[in-house]
Length: 113
Length: 114
Image (cartoon, rainbow over all chains, first blue to last red; front, side, top):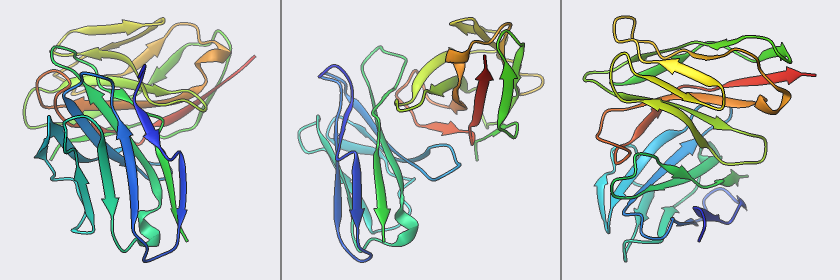
């Protein structure tokens, strides 16, 4: 695609439910990042993939959060037993070899009620 | 750890006014510095960047100079337009190129009145 695509754009879920958020990076980009942006704050790093492997997952807040990128392209961020505090905009970004810019998607707004 | 501090907002200016948005950082090494912008209804976009001390990044009339001695990367524009209304984020990266995580400031909302 032309840019980074994230689906869904909005997700409302009940506390305790499981959710999956999808990111489709720019074709050919090897690096993929997930960030979380709470209201009134800047994006906070969650996890970084280089190809299929998670090169840095130091930002994942706890073991309820998990992300995969099985074929080195599309990535899925998975949140188990959602809590109201998980409500935020989840942003995905990608960058390619020799490209010194990360391109962001428009984000998925997750609301846990 | 790394951190980025931006001046408190929001900022409201009249068209053609001069803009300064302050940004200071704390980092263990020699980071690259960035300004990202988020226009209403759109995703984050890179506005400009600087990768080493004394470098000046510029784009769309905006400029920012990497000041290592003051650990700052203030954003300036000589004459703002209504279309510059957006949220501006200062960020740093300790890695090489873009293949490293970004640490963002809180962001500041700029509104420009006609």
